[in-house]
Length: 260
Ligand SMILES: Nc1ncnc2c1ncn2[C@@H]1O[C@H](COP(=O)(O)OP(=O)(O)OP(=O)(O)O)[C@@H](O)[C@H]1O
Image (cartoon, rainbow, N blue to C red):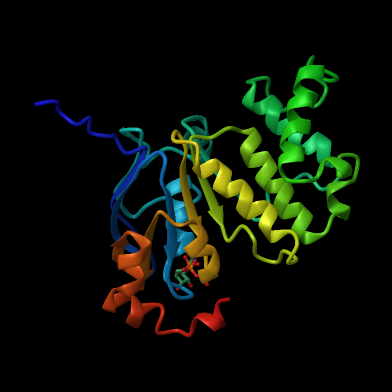
């Protein structure tokens, strides 16, 4: 009988926990994430979603438990090492250079991915291929027309789209988005959602998304994890998780319209 190959998780957390004083913000969360799957993490305000993201991407040190990236224990590794190992996160605008142009921001990401370092004046400057690659990512977020604009002058929605372009340019294996459409205008939202759809069709990419808007959750999720008071209370296919009693009580008990 032919054996079915067992897929290795690209990312795992084991009993991952962080305490702030007496408050346990993330409480013994164990989960595996696989390539080709988009997992949405939902939960009420203060449930621990962003803190869990910070523990995974290395912005916060765990109090206990572990984070494994492709089987490598990175619990004590900083964010930079985790990035080198393939984690990429869209950082709510904190990784943009406001005094540089849109093109320069994406070029730096392409340059970084190409292993050339972040020096604006290094040999790649003017390098046609890198500029073309940066242009490609700008086209994917429908921002090719704004390549010479200073980032600080962009609308909030454009800055969020640029952030997605930069994330894509870094070509991570694991992509983490924290409410990617928050603050976007109605016509900007589909650009980003279509892009995330396209990323999730790539069987090699693992996508994690924190999201409040239930229409976005329905549209994108292959799997839903529910956090409540820092604890994982449900994990499964969208249909079953949405129907489960614990979710109805813990999350959907809050009217959806409040989060829409
Ligand atoms: N640096 C910190 N110091 C102390 N408490 C913190 C810190 N960061 C988060 N917390 C607390 O941990 C809990 C979880 O916060 P977190 O921001 O992760 O929730 P969330 O699910 O992302 O919420 P929201 O949906 O509102 O963004 C909250 O009670 C928050 O006040």
